[in-house]
Length: 343
Image 1 (tube, rainbow, N blue to C red):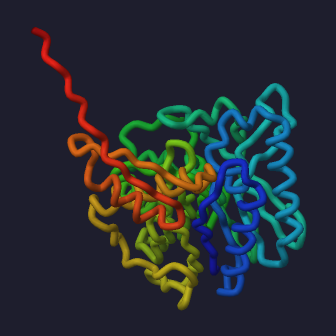
Image 2: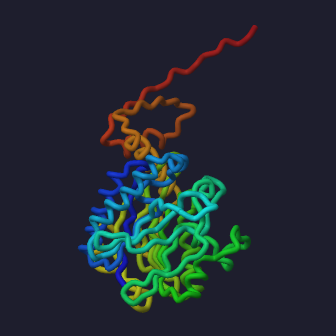
Image 3: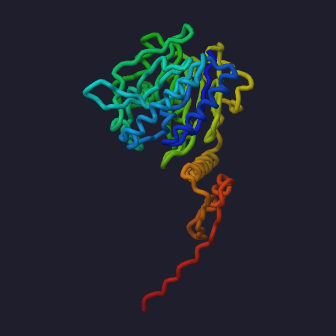
């Protein structure tokens, strides 16, 4: 089965731009032979939406964006992360949802089971967790579609787990033959290696192919690194997406053996397995992406940087110049402050 992975950049609340970016990526993946296309967690509204989810107009705009997106989807299904409604009471009014769109309609939904509420996450504040999940049947295959944290609870990988449930094992027990994960996994130093090792363990232990599409870009204080990945049933890397840049991959998850990427798969060059750049290069790429997205998503037309010989790292103006080519960027030296000693 050929799966299209849309590793794209979204902006919180910019439903029109997010939808246009999504549809353009879908068209590229379809042209490259994808049978099913997947996009990141909460892509249509942008991640993290936080307290915007408490605004009725934001929620309605998100639901409308999903309906409009569905109307533009033809026979090749798209599975995208979005805000969903929860009619069950008692319970929170919203769900973190993955919706499958096909032939102008929303044909299937599943909801996130494990809601992270630690570190930078506060999803339990807004969403109701799924009480049960089931595979999505497509082209004679049972697909286990999960959302981000749902795949981060493997008992063999983590010495201590945060949740009693393991959605992956629940899906495997119901006959899931392929695991797909829609993710908005924020980056920190070394996160890409930990994430890949964890996903490889899941694929190897459950003996199923696995594909994760991860968000890329910066929103608020979070940076998302991409590095989407496709693995075969032995946990071997079939395709690894770019870091800190948009990417589109179409991969055959059932090609046999270690798997072979679909030729000419679009934007991605399909980096060799586990081929991550050096730590310094990753840090620079993350900082550059964060600066660029902050400036452009806020609509700033120019940037002024005050430089201090004592306090400003040399990489500071360099990263800004590199990532703000389309923005007027000026740097000014700061005069030192001379303080008179008390007599």
